[in-house]
Picture 1 (cartoon, helix red, strand yellow):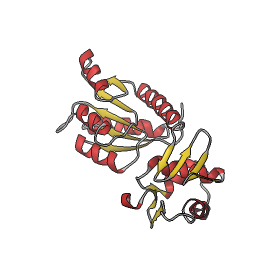
Picture 2 (tube, helix red, strand yellow):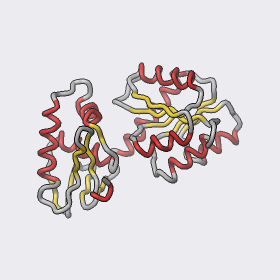
Picture 3 (cartoon, one colour):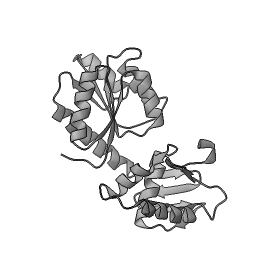
Picture 4 (spheres, one colour):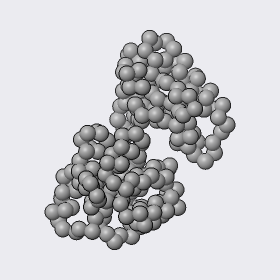
Length: 232
């Protein structure tokens, strides 16, 4: 079972288990990041995009329930969260769901089952995201009709520019690296760097140049952000 490029945050204070989960998911084509405690997890979630979070319940400092609640509340993030715990009571499971978890696995668990559940949740979440209209300032992108407007006027974009715009708007106001853009659009068959730069140049001419407020920003040597200037 495969999935398009996906990045998963593993929040687990037992290093051996975290490493085993990470190795297994990477073998399946996912990119993984690690946090050994809740505060680090919250910081990483506020700075990076993750397609899903694997979250241990029992950790030093703040536990997984609080981390889950703060991801949903403070950070306003809706990526799938799969909680891991050695406690298998019904009350524990219900607590996880009440705090915003999407799924619950009891330790010990099969790696293949964790991978399968992650893939299922990520695919479902991406499908839901693909139908939601995206808006930054006065620019609106409707994924169902692939229509882009600014100040109420339709902007006609090429298929590649639409893909770039969708990724940047989905991640806004976070920064998106050049590597992430290239991987999401072209997969392993990444063209030379001038190709992406050319598409971004043409995209900027259409969505920014005719308007007073510029939304597409280049962060030299790092990547790109689509946001209002106050969010830079």
